[in-house]
Length: 193
Image 1: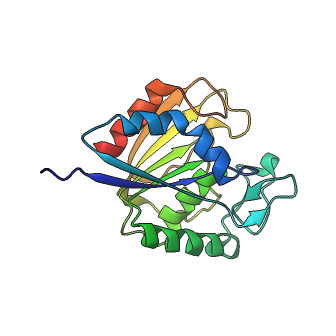
Image 2 (image 1 turned 60 degrees about the vertical axis):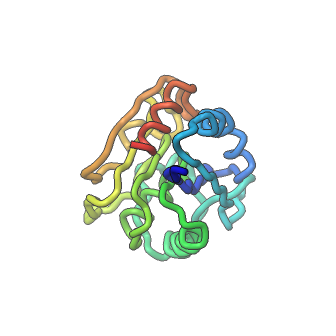
C-alpha cells in the first residue's frame, strides 16, 4: 500500500476574526483538498490570544489599526510572544505548511523571517503585508505563494510580503476576500508540487 504525502496545514485568521470564521471561509478549499485521493491534507486552526477592541481577536499584543497597515514597524516585543505560541503549535501538530489571511498572513511572514522554521517548507499568504523593517531578511528555504487583489481596500496589493527567493503570485479581483475555487485549486497545486 502506497503512503500518501501528508500536508499538515496551520491556518491563521485575520484581525477581528476567529478560528471558526476562518474554517468557514476555507470550506470550499477543504472540499477541493478532500477530493484529492493522492494526498492527505490535515487542517489545523488556532485562535489569536488577544481580544481586539473592535471585536474578535488580534495576533499581537498591540491591536492592529487598519489605517496603519504599511507603516507598522517590526517590533520584536510585539511579535515574539505570538511567534513562540505559533512555534509550539507547529511542533505539536508537525505542521509543514502555513496559511494565513490578512493579519494571519503577516504572522506567517514574521514567523518565516524572524523565527527558526526548519519544519516549514511552504506558505500561502492571502491578502497580507509585511511589517516595515529596513533590515528585513531574505528567505531562501521556504516556497511562498502570495494571493492578492488589486481591488483590496484593506491591504493595498503592493504591500504583499516580499524578500522570498522562491515565491509565486496569484491575483484575483475579489478585494479583501477569499478567492474563488479556480484559485483554490491553484493553491492546492502549489502545496502539493
